[in-house]
Amino acid sequence: MSDRDLRVLAVEFLLGLQIDPTKAQYIAFVHTEKEHKHIHIIANRIDENGKVLKDNYIGFEAQRIAHEIALKYGWTSIRQENKNKKQRANNTNLIAKNAIKSAHREVLKQKPNDLQEYIRLMFEKEIEVKPTINKQGNIQGYRFIHLPTNTNLKASEVDRNIKLNELFKNTVSSEPKDEINKLFTNQELSEPQMQNWKTDTSILFSMLSVLQFGGNDEDDEQKKRKRRTLKR
Image 1 (cartoon, rainbow, N blue to C red):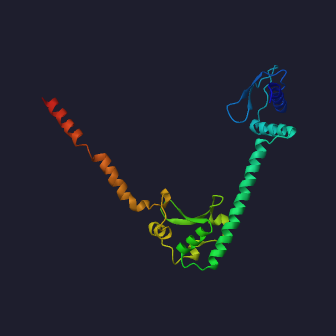
Image 2 (image 1 turned 90 degrees about the horizontal axis):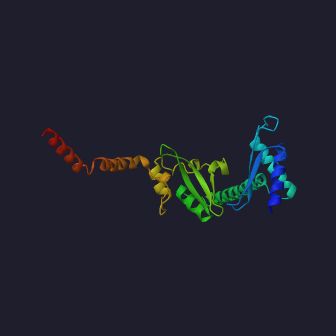
Image 3 (image 1 turned 90 degrees about the vertical axis):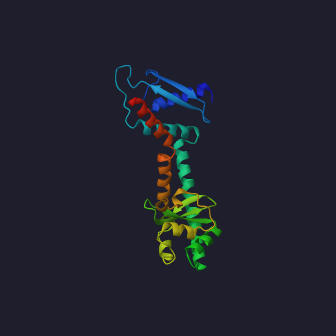
């Protein structure tokens, strides 16, 4: 766009805010450091008669005016782009939900013996099942990851009737470490929430003890020497 085109846009925007560009004090400058060229406007809210211009909901007003200008010139506004992104996300979620529910039904028809087998069969259908660990270190639910779209959903978001703890209640351990070791055999547990922090607490404190108290003999000896020097 030419400088003239940009000036026209700035004027239209000010008029939309009910600011008279022929009388108001303002400065508009163009930024080109990003992929899209854009305009910044600094305007004086006090007009030539000393009247304060209203700025109620100016953020929403600015979005509305920018949207209207974009429509006028056949452009895609930020509002429309956000709407499109939301729609695409909703479509992706819907695809993932349907794929997960379909895989779940097919796996149940195979009558898996336990949760471990269920997870393995789901993974074969490009659905990863992961436990959700609460702050107490206990498993409180499960999430499904639709691998083709990398969509991560809670089981309840997919279908409230999918309750793995009830389906496999006789095969699920109440201890997180036992549960995870059983369900994710031969898989690398790299995520922090997959660890049993309760059992690792003693190791943590042992490390802190070494850091706090280990290697301080030299410092203690220096303190003793200083005391002896002072006594002399």
